[in-house]
Image 1 (cartoon, rainbow, N blue to C red):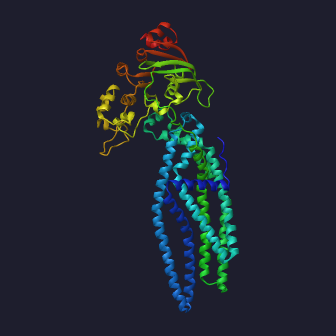
Image 2 (cartoon, rainbow, N blue to C red):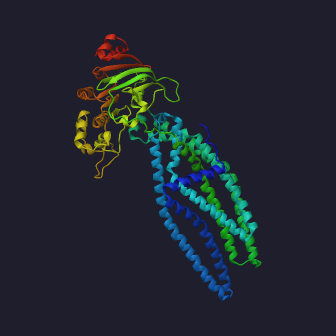
Image 3 (cartoon, one colour):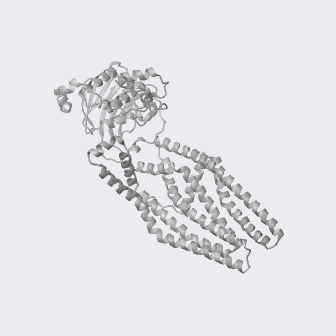
Length: 600
């Protein structure tokens, strides 16, 4: 993966402005308050230092017998105290505003991020470049609110630094110049270090992803038995350490490389600060300056150094973040699937594949080649073939997740690409090999999620469970359909969830399709974990009503032989088609595939 281009100063300020614009758009009040606070945090301490210095001078004069100076000292003390009170109250209010701003901004940005990700063109979910871009963009979006908070701190520190330099320049121009020269090397060194850290992170995105996936695997209780059984624990731990060192230790090594330069820069700052204090002390001893000037110089120089140090630290934190803003913006500009197209108001009477060929993005290998067939309404069709023949890809095209590279998929003679995809999906009930397990929900919700747009009725859930051969085991759960089906979940009454077997999960997912009551059912190995008798009863119900169009992928002869038409795929082509009896009579590839089951 190529390095992200380094940002110049103009691009950095452009990125900061981009963060500010988006933050201002979603939370204008808190953002404006935060920016105002940045100015107050920068300027008010400088003003307080000035009056504290005046107080010291007045107190010394009053101690020498000047009564007017005594009254001035009391006035300065009151002003200094009031300024401190104002700053304290402001910061207390600022804590609340910051918390609210972070919540509002983070919620808005994360909502945009998730909505955009879930609306991408489907092929992008299989695209590595998109996945890497998403990973970097997500890293930025997760900390967006904190990024703006850092930007506000950066502004405050910069204003504080400039104000301190100006305050010193008014007092003694050469002193301001000396402080400015002292802090410049530290700022430059941090710029260089942060650039190298950004480049390192971008070069190791894959390493970071691998480490995260490996750590996820190590933290899954259901995987530990296999890891121990195969003696993988020590290997996985060593591999994790290797990935961690590559990802994180490299950045620490950069710190080590720059350490001598940092020590030199810090020493220069300390030398300038010491020189300033020695100089003002000598001036006071020679009676060229009042006593309060020592406090003024000491506090202002210290303030300038602190602001410079804080500016450098914040800059190192924010530099990578604002560079990642470009990834976020690039990700948000990726095209999404539009809802434009003709609305499909009724299920089609015919679905036709017309010389359809397909290859996945980034690959030159044809997965499907000149595939043609027609499915009529209420027909039952099975797609069979060896693994890798293109069966699941055919289903993805039928669903509309991908578009053919050549040929057409027609619904009653009209190209599927011309229809609004969402309206086509309303007529489909689909159970894929990788179905969703809603671990956060109970058993009943896992069924009703098949049709969230319709009113929920317990009776409809029970009917769907019955059709999917799931009624018996669900009703035996501790709280029936209200039972969480993950043993890590717990309801408000303290009832813990339970785990389901693979076959039980598959029946529950199938019940979701029955609950949906879609006129077209598409099943990709829907009963691989279900026993043969239960499977036979399920398909009897599917086929018996005569009102559904059913397309199924299966390796079980007991399922396949009941359908109206069988499509035999081999290397992306339909090599045989017909009824079970017709294909058996041919004694061709279909017979060879099911040879062992046919003997039985």
